[in-house]
Image (cartoon, rainbow, N blue to C red):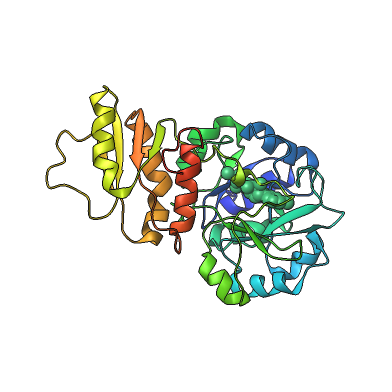
Length: 328
Ligand code: AMP
Ligand code: MG
């Protein structure tokens, strides 16, 4: 009997109303047929995600935008032309054919054209839109390998496509273009600077918006360990303090602060890359590694919020949660 190639098998699973874990350039997604409300509902169940938190619809290219959105503004087409395929999600007015379960009851819909070859092949083989959030339990660290998806969701996911580790490593940037002024709802893999250059205007980040985004929840993308954020020059001292209290401490040491002798300064020490693209690519892997090493506390500092540093700082802040964050 002919063995069905993985992409075709995954497309069959989607057609049958099943859930597929698939790689994108940002993180792994948990995909369902965006036009099948029962399948989409299962995404929420498997993730443990509240029904009010909408999913991103993945499409093949910008020509399909109007199948999903109404009154697509010029700004959206300009951003799509410049950044798709790639780590940018556009929030637009919902086309009535988009099931409400996909948009969490909102009148807007989030749409993206992913750049990963496997995701693109899957979209072509399937032939429709794929509604997908990140393939992890709600609030947990996002998966950047196929193994993370299997470990996190187990039998909740019907099929997992393995495309190797995700290169961008943080989620897409979400830009709301449904209102008068474009706004960044979630910083991510497309930098604010590049978006502003393309639009010739400045873009506010996280401005109060009528739309809710899971990425805007305070405690999200969180490791099991308690995350503590301090100034870069205080990481070692703060780690020692926790260690003095008998805690297993993990450190995300900022560039240039690695002492010659790391003996005795914590249970697990990771020197983070100075290059923000590299850091973003490893960030979730680092958090998983420190959880894996059973650290109780992770001490880290925020990078400068420029380029991908903005998305990294956002994820670290959310991993720390407002109640736990020592830095305002
Ligand atoms: P996840 O990858 O699990 O974080 O899920 C996809 C992200 O897209 C979440 O942060 C959603 O809340 C966000 N999203 C999807 N649709 C919308 C929308 N209509 N408005 C704002 N954010 C959205
Ligand atoms: Mg997520």
